[in-house]
Image (cartoon, rainbow, N blue to C red; front, side, top):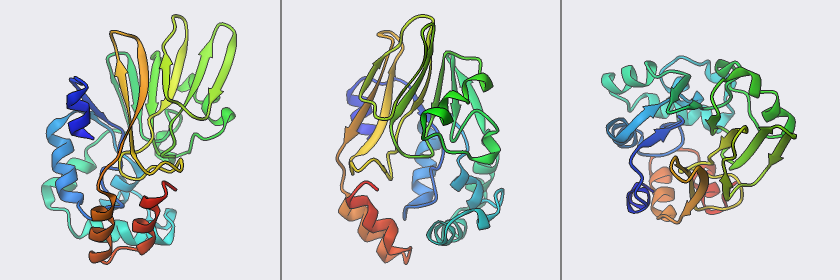
Length: 224
């Protein structure tokens, strides 16, 4: 995905959290994001891996992965994850892993109502989220509210505000197994979802060889 973004001329990387938690390379992923991202927020799996979130909140497989991940982070990586904010603002956009409304509660924005109720809790024109791993957009404009549960490309109109779910690089859940991210073009005033195939078989092999739950490997083939 980073190679694709570079080829597209992207000049800044924004990370919405959960850099660690499911995959077999938490340290290298974290180091790479730490070097290259201009802004990063904390995700619930990041928080769980460093003891900031009770692991009873997770399902069985996610809890096992969080415990496995915690054992493989060095002190510097733990400190980095622990210090990440839950909310950040950059260039007129709000970044949150889950929701700008009570971000520490890790609410999912999935339905039309979920997203529309979050608009009062940020002041910027744009808010980018992840967490559900499903690309979509909520719109607040002069004519009212709108919701598009799938997203490919959206022109950003004057006097409109948007919440954009950018999907997931590592574990998409919209039944498309390709890695997903969003490119926010501040000149063209657009947000577009990009899908990039990757070597999922190697990622699956690493997960299984690490002794992580097999479901975390199996789901990569199906995008669920």
